[in-house]
Amino acid sequence: MKTPYFVIDADLIEANLRVLRGVIDRTGCKILLAQKCFSCYGLYPLISQYLNGMTASGLYEARLCHEEMPTGENHIFSPAFHEDEMDEILHICDHIVFNSPRQLALYGARAKKAGLQVGLRINPECSTQEGHAIYDPCAPGSRLGTTLSQFESQLTDNLSLLDGLHFHTLCEQNSDDLETTLDAVEEKFGKYLQGMKWINFGGGHHITRADYDIPRLERCIRRMQTEYGLEVYLEPGEAIALNAGELHCRVMEVQPIGSDGVKNVIVDTSAACHMPDVIEMPYTPPIVLPKESFPFKGDRRSSCVFRLGGPTCLSGDIIGVYQFTQEMCEGDEVVFGDMAIYSMVKTNTFNGMPLPNIYIRRGENLTLWKQFEYVDFKSRI
Ligand SMILES: Cc1ncc(COP(=O)(O)O)c(C=O)c1O
Image 1 (tube, rainbow, N blue to C red):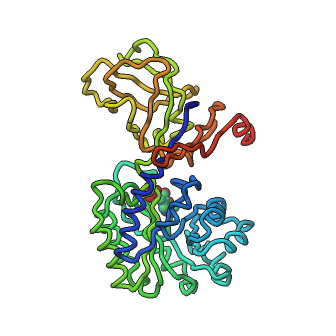
Image 2: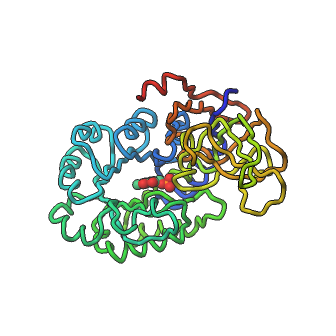
């Protein structure tokens, strides 16, 4: 098979979906897929058997949900909406969440008239994450969400337009941080929750991770249901496709040992083009093949330490430094794990890099879902 290519494992996605469905069944909450993380719509028929719908970051994702998961709820949030997209959004969406009192004033009444549920994203100003400022909507000066002082000074008579409040403050976090955030939401916005129909806890809940505390999450959900009579929505992305995808590539060249004692290996995939989160987050992806290969943390246990990088011009196009049990050779296959989330949705063709084909694995069957060619590069420019 021509490398590089992604493989999405439908069985592993389904295992994640079963965990999420358990939360829905035990609590009566609703869980949506955040399409920004994973929008391979070949899996939407499977996802629709377990979840209540999708959430979109703009018109295109909302259209994808409308076309490919027509039975589910279609929610949309954006920091700002385009006037010329509003008619279509109001036609296909069920919930619309505005980011600011100004956006609510511009479009709220129109959305209500069109029959949508209307929400406002609040900013509880409660940071619970360390080290990833670009993923922290509660960082000082954030443009995301309405703070209490903005809420009270700018909302004026549009409060009656609101059916619900939405917050999104977490990133790959456990339910203790959700609990802390809920305390802040209640302390600041508790008196406004009384008049609402629903609350949306956003995403960032790593519910399908082995150490995730699901009972605590369910206590958080029940707390909002019993104290305020609210319907509770969650809209995770990562939790749906966590550890359910691979990126396969091949070694193109092994360079002689470098000035820092590490051999550079050029592979035919690129951090910059195929897994930009490796650079943005940043993080070092796990390797599932060759087996027993680990990110190198200075604990040299073998002489086989390699820096894997892409064939682009970017010096920083480095996937990571790894320790292997054997030497690497030209033509060897390398498979990166946990590559279904924020990967396919973020690929680009910088340097004319080909986009990886996408396969879906179900049991023993591997089906080619998307094949990319030169035209996919040319048509974007
Ligand atoms: C508003 C909103 N909802 C949901 C999500 C999904 O988050 P995650 O994929 O981390 O669960 C995000 C991610 O950025 C988001 O911004």
